[in-house]
Amino acid sequence: MTRLIFLGIESSCDDSAAAVLRQDGDGPPEILSSVVEGQTKLHAAFGGVVPEIAARAHAERLDGCVEQALELAGISLAEVDGIAVTSGPGLIGGVLSGVMLAKGLAAGSGKPLIGVNHLAGHALTPRLTDATPFPYLMLLASGGHCQFLITHAADRFQRLGGTIDDAPGEAFDKTAKLLGLPQPGGPSVEAEASLGEPDRFHFPRPLLDRPGCDLSFSGLKTALLRARDALVAQKGGITVQDRRDLCAGFQQAVADVLAEKTRRAIALYLALEPAEPVLAVAGGVAANGKIRALLETVCAKSGITFIAPPLRLCTDNAAMIAWAGIERFRAGINDADDLVARPRWPLDATASPMIGSGKKGAKA
Ligand code: KG4
Ligand code: ZN
Image (cartoon, protein in one colour):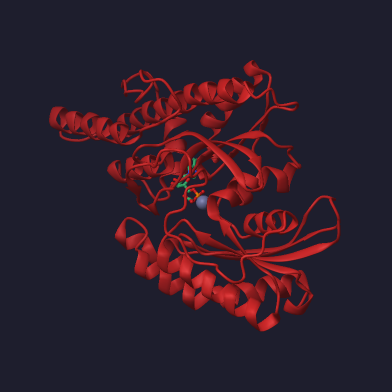
């Protein structure tokens, strides 16, 4: 095993990102630089990510991110051993910006080019941060994704279930919007919820009555809208305490559903008899204290280790793409000749396709 230095590029949603990663042999990987330029302000007025604006912003900024990442890492493109780029799934204009840039850099420098599935980037992060051995269970929960996966190898993922409509982060964002709280909704709803009474309003626990690990969050948002409107009809508006209680009830419902579905996913995973069982989380929703605490309890009760990578590596970034690139490269994969941008790209091609598409574009 040799030393590898990889450049990673990510542009599948609303973060333009580049990173440089080094791994000496099979030692712990080192993030030499990780640059993330968010676009929240560009989309703020529209209540969601506007694909054309995102694509234009990536095209304008991505090369600057790469330059900055190389400079911060103190290396030149000539010293890099390979270039990894998110080639799907995501908003196609953004993915294309990244793929075209990476192809140009690879062609100009003669370096290997590796296409990375964005979700594989998230799913392999526990190996970047904690050297987690295969197979491990993964919960991806963000504004655009929600799924349970067993990661068997760098290119083999088994999807146990996922959302059939909204992602949980999207539900937090919509809840914040309905209650006049700032975006992103997750942190603002969580802050309000910490001052509220979770049992005052009863929100549904969608799909708990059905077997399996699929989830649904859009009905929860509708229930919240109805509860808010009922208060407005009764009293002409909602009080500060009403808002806190609504947030607390909503958050508890999301946490309960995620916890129960996680229990079921763990049972399926443990049937594989992994030597060192692990549940790892990724995505912005993993930042939620209540949800994280419940998942930790579920893991402790099942006797499995709970891993939550640091938040900057849980949310979209290019270090995870560089890392997935290194893992794929070490497995002998080089996509230079036929890399295409893919708006949809399920990690597990054998799992039934998901319906619906969230604020951040197509779900895989
Ligand atoms: O992973 P991420 O940064 O981006 C993608 O969606 O890909 O996740 C952002 C999502 C947003 O929907 C945000 O509201 C949610 O994660 N989020 C949270 C919290 N912090 C961020 N949701 C619940 N509680 C939080 N503390
Ligand atoms: Zn993501």
